[in-house]
Image (cartoon, rainbow, N blue to C red; front, side, top):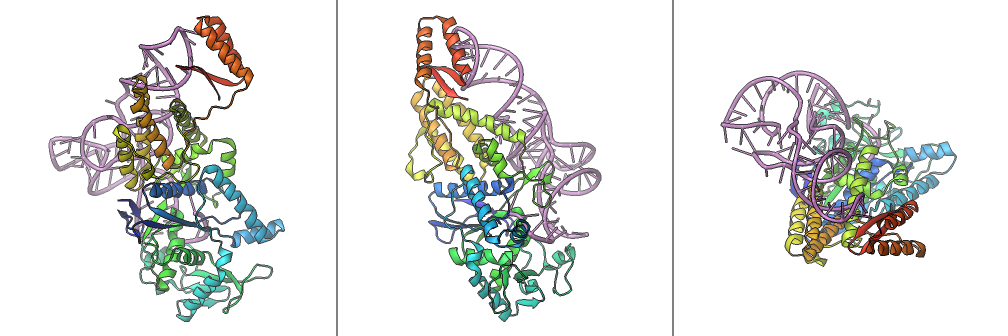
Length: 463
RNA sequence: GGCGGCGUGGCCGAGCGGUUAGGCAGGGGCCUGCAAAGCCCCGUACUCCGGUUCGAAUCCGGACGCCGCCUCCA
């Protein structure tokens, strides 16, 4: 049974999908007004891993993640650059998918854009106005949070205590500082959509309710996002669903953030590193490994040192892949357990790692178990237990593949000249002419090859 | 003010009552003509002060330090 911490109920609970064979999953996506940063990288990796794992276990997952392509930040950027909102959104959405591809994050099954759902949002807002759950003030239409009896559920606080701590000044017109904008009336030069209550554009919290319920249906299974969305964004989504009498997410899951020193990485603090920069200088797999080495709910530290640490661990995994000629599995269709039949130690490993991941995605312990298996398989290989070693090694590759991490055995093609040097060295070694053999190795090294001996003779690869 | 979280060996990062987490780095050994890769062994850590317990990093109380949310944020 798959278990996952549920933010609303505050404990690890069975996932319990609406339909036993399927899982509907919604992840709040990016607002495309700037380059993606490491925080975006983490949440996409975390939920990509979850999606892959659930699929590995046999669930048919429908994964929806939106693109917010209209909001204040986009408008401001367009204004600053003298371009249009659509142009800004398009440009940064392209950057987004480029980064996702580089990270190996699988495309969602649906990627709804806010601007495509405005009509449905208008309908919802109109119904709130009709039911007196929303009210109009000079700059827009607001949701009356006092109309939802359990407002504050996700925050773990009552409406009163939230109100008492509100740091934002209540505008004179808002009934409560917690009330949030459903609709912002158009200002001159801003994009707007027609609405019976006044032309304008949707507030951020409305799109996700409309799109998640619209695509996944009432009572969908799992709603995910970064911890900072828990309140107020997800709370406000919930409040709207409640007010509309529609069953919302059965399960809420939130990932911890990326830290810089002792501070959360965030746009407002300006202490962020763009994903684009990171990917330009490191193997993207290192970030995935770094992410799965800690628990998804814990904060993680992403620094040049921790990235380098993960890269070195990757070197070892790739050497392992080379030794056992392991296949790359993460790139195409998701890895599915049903496609493999393991026995012996390999089967035990799948069992162990499976139990860990089923229990609130305990990737750090799973990774630890996988590294232990790497050592075991190597040891078995050294003891000439080839079959047992190979089957265990394949299980390691399958499980890493199930988490979206490829082990790369690829040895770059060498040209004729290099092959000749390799052959000459093997001949020299065979004749015990060590001096010549070493000279040939130096020659290969000077051409940028890493030289390793094996039972089959000299092996070269690119460093 | 309310709510939540954290403080672990050189670094990263698990554990949440008794057993080696794991990785990276470092040291020693084996293997190897040498090197690389691989294997084996090694660090004996849990902010502090009390308490509960046969036994606590793990539970309870207190102290100190730090972080987050209650405003846009993944």
